[in-house]
Image (tube, rainbow, N blue to C red; front, top):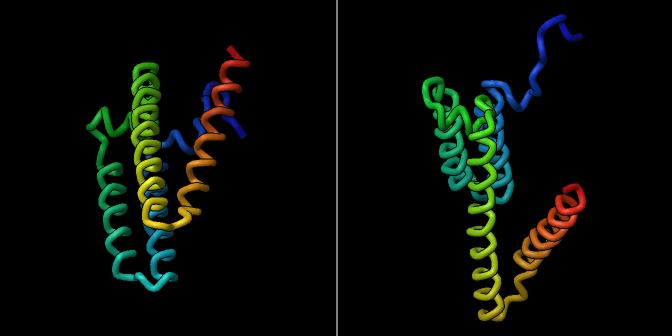
Length: 135
């Protein structure tokens, strides 16, 4: 129930959302690596994620880290996030295409990379159509 005069924030806009999400993701990846027989590598992955989670939790004074976490979600951070996501998407697309070509050149069918590339392509084209149709 909402109290009068007080707007509720979505859970993912709260101060603790990003640290908890990051730590949980690290633990989930540790569990996945351990299930695959790579517990030592999983522990390294989990520790890296936990370090980042602690950085987010201690980011009380860092405007940039609070903005990444969505806590300071003003228009400026929305623009920065959009541009950053576009740059990250481009870098990932290039990395996936290079990895795909490399795997194919080694005689591998590159099925996993093909799947990721296909999903990314469909998501990109679909979002372009969706956003264009709304604007």
